[in-house]
Amino acid sequence: MERIAVTVAALAGIFLCPAAAQTIGSAAPADTSALSSPPPPLRFNLEECLSYAMGNNFTRQQMQLSEQSYGATYRQSKRERLPDVSASLSETVGHTSGASGTWSGSYGVDASVTIYQGGAIGHAIEQSKLQLENAAYQTSAYNNELTMQILQNFLNVLGYEELLKYQEAVIAASEEQLKQGKEQYAAGKILESDYLMLEAQLAGDKSNVVDTRASRDNSLLTLKGLLSMDLSADLQIVYPDTSAIVSMQAIPAQEEVLQSAMAALPDLEVLRYGVRIAETNLKLSQAGHLPTVSLFAGLSTGHQRYSELGAQLSDRFTQQAGVRVSIPIFSKGQTQTKILQSKLSLQQAKLDRQQGELSIKQSVLQEYLNVRTALAKYETAIVKENAYRKTFDAYRAQFNVGSITAVELLQQQNNYISALNDYVQSKYGFMLKRKMLDVYMGVAVKM
Image (cartoon, helix red, strand yellow):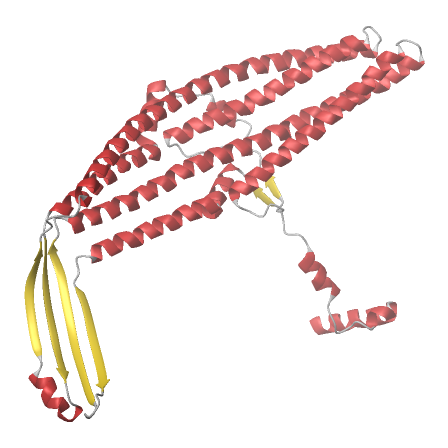
């Protein structure tokens, strides 16, 4: 049946479009259009944005590569306890004046293992392990930072989208006002200046829409960059449940927030690991004063003349084993300098930890206060927006019947627009700060 359908389609093309008949057997137009069609849009909610970013963000991938590098260093540090084994082989041909040529060779296998180095190998293993674990905490800290940036731009897009809906409704109202004003101006009920003011208001409202769309597009572009996706991709934001903001208004107690943050934030672990790594580095420096003890063993043989190769290899076969002790006596002050520098680095790491913990506590408490303040502003903005919207509706009705002037109407309209902007900004500002508080507390970010 498929072959019959293809044959019928080809014959129809020949009879209906002779020019197309000349191209039968070459590229198929249907397939070409399919290949050139744009990919379907990506519809992401907040959780999907975060999931995509965790798997594709370039900076995060670089940090994961650093983790792998620290992992390789850690595995290699544990291998330092193993012996070194090497083999050597040489063959030499020589000739001197008045003598026949000579052919000599030597062969050997050597092995050595360090059994004591002032604990340096153990300290190096511990340090590389700490560095590996610290790298994982640094990645976790970046995950929080990335989450906050995605939150900000995701909510910015939502806020601008909501503001656009309100602004478009304002434009519709301005267009109706301009229509009413035109009729009143034609009837001589208002001055030309009033009519021109209505025109200017409509132009200003349209300009506001253009600005808001540009801001939305910029936030969407930034969001794509954080997700490390193709900037030309069609990313569409999926709106969360409108009731989500209701549950956000339940704010935990300040002490609960602080305790959760101090237990969950990976930034604190990074500071603590900085101290532990510095302590291990001091132990490594101090090991430079202690002796090194190693065992060694070897097998060797050789020959002088090729004609007696077998006998010479047997006669010269040698086995050896021994203990080597290396005692540091004078290193031009290098060991003492390393110890001093390590002590200073340890003191600096402890100060960094103390300052970092204080700064983090301050940031968490400040964020908590910001959430409280943002909630209060949002609740106030709801009341203002409702009041100014109703007032604006009432003034529009009065203007339509000629009871008030255009100046009085536009003053109320601008008051409403200002209240509207405050409402949207305070709404999404509160949502952002509330969700950032969840990030500090180690709570999974959902919306």
